[in-house]
Image (cartoon, rainbow, N blue to C red):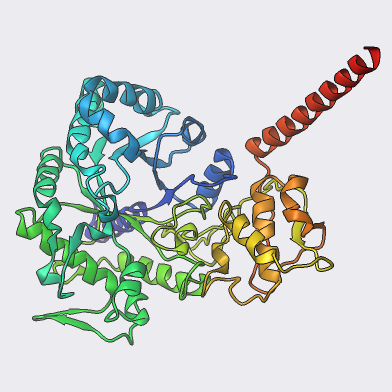
Length: 484
């Protein structure tokens, strides 16, 4: 038996350890030129990230995570739900290829904790596209895990979007699930409870702030001077608690008041919209971490915070959909090339984010507008460039929104040029483009150089190979003509 002071000290250590372990990060890969998975794993380890949530089960990513000791949530894309719902054999095949093959039994494999069925399949904008297949897919994956003797090791979850639950009055006590989802949520929560799995859900203070004029920026950022919101005898000091308790009320109304909650996605974007900046994101993230570390919980779940929280997101992704806003491509705590945007730590101590090392870029070249040309049609060319590349930093409130014409045209040209691996013809624009080795970045507006990836290398090599083939064909044709 330990003496009481020693026992108390060990208890505190355990509490601190469990709090630190409960914070992870989402790793999305919707990028035109993704940072190589081994480099990302180095980034995670150097920043002391202990948990990561994926949106798919990319073999290259899983190979990189193997032996890292990072706890992993695998993702199943929405596009697979219909098949997995209708075919248990398909579910068994998926589990074999993506879980059994990599699972660590205390060895050098991947420490898989959860399988997330779908990526926010209940999002209201999807309508009925995915949600009729979710429960069947989850049950088939669960059965496949059990058959593979992993049912007790890996839990099946379904990530729910921020708009799964609502409160028309804005008061948490009036929270409920959307009427079109009520039956599905009861089925899901019954399934989760049966298998002792938590509810995965997105909390989005940024979108709440954007959509609700009664939510102030200070209230969203955990500022002590923010105006409080009252709901009967309960006082809410921040937007996170307000949203969280709206969910708790919704759960209570359909008979699941005690189910464990994992915040599967929460963050603050740094570009592409007003109030989406690195400094504001830093304030939000530090406020959130401090709030989670305090373990005070919320008015409806005092001293009972989420069992795990996954920050959104690790890296910026230039191929994310911008249907809900241009900020969607700028959730990363790191830029697309693994450079920290602000000072922050994942709660594993005092160590701040560490930049990715030895990142390989394309050549230091940019595409800009040629000021010696007639630029009367340049805006049309810029719009065309932005239709297939990422120009979200030019959005109102974005980091490049204040650069004047024709610098904004140059930004669009360069985005397209980098997207296309700096091919000479991708800086043509009818003769309006000009390749330069002088960095045209202005103040906070960064004209980026894209990453060197296997894709960009192979694309460039394929392009050169094609040119050689065409040249040889032309030469051969000419020789034939000359002979004839």
